[in-house]
Amino acid sequence: MAQPSTRQELIDYVLRKLGAPVLEINVAQEQIEDLVDDAIQFFQERHFDGVIQTYLKYVVTQEDIDRGKARPPGLPTGQGSQQSGITTESVTTSIVGTATTFTYYENSNYLEVPSSIIGVNKVWKFDGITTVNSANMFNIKYQMFLNDIYYWGNMDLLSYSMAMSYLETMDFLLDTHKQIRFNQRQDRLYLDVDFGQMGVGEVLIIDCWRHMDPSDYARVWNDSFLKRYVTALVKRQWGQNLIKFQGMKLPGGMEFNGRQLYDDAQTELDKINEEMMSKYEIPPLDIIG
Image (cartoon, rainbow, N blue to C red; front, side, top):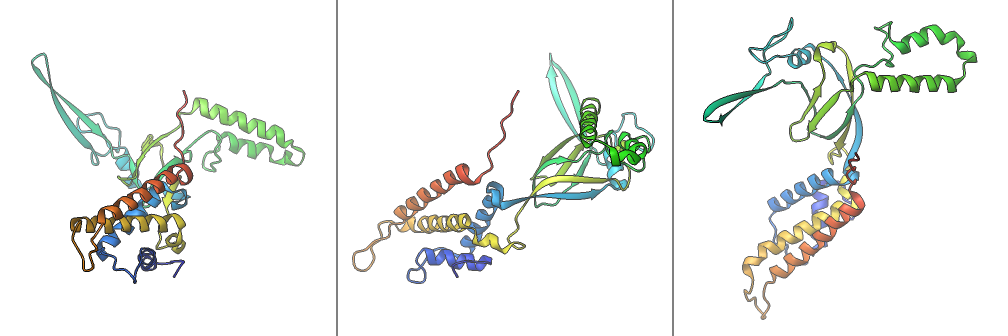
């Protein structure tokens, strides 16, 4: 059908675009499956319609805290610190003829994230002077709600907004903002925080990008870019398979021209990749300063 909604329907659509069943497409089914996988991966990593911004909620456990508080062997440890989860690496160098060994340690201060996550924007504040937290009665925002709630009927919202902006500025200047590190090939979100200050049951909100799984969203198979891209990939593979028969004569004096088929497909792919960068790909943010 012209609007594929499954993997096989997309493959059938691509083969028809290339001439089947009138022509025999000399590409193995296994090769087509691999090319579809490559196209889906490219679509999810580069196309803005291949991902969706989402928010994941994570509840901190005691195991997370113990792992994040782990200390390297031989270093002072706080009460309750664990020794598990330590990664060590030793490097031996020669300085003026003397061999010196340097040992590096890395704590397991990370959270496991689903493999569908390809990017993390931020983790919402773990703490802050303006965060409403019913467990902390000395929190500034808690006190404002507690003491000023009966004034709200006559309260100027502009003054309240200015006061909250001022508190956010204080929080930004006085409270060290937590740093995170993420690489999609690890499936780990590293939190550079003091895990001793985190509590069991504390909720973290992760602002991240998750790829669109065609198994869950069938309309991905009908994406116009994906259909063109898979067609060009299969066409190039067809030409590559026929290159070894270059010059072989067929009945009637015809001969295979796999090189021309390959070059045409490569030209189409170059054009598609250029369109990806100029139309469909989210441009990288510039670093200023």
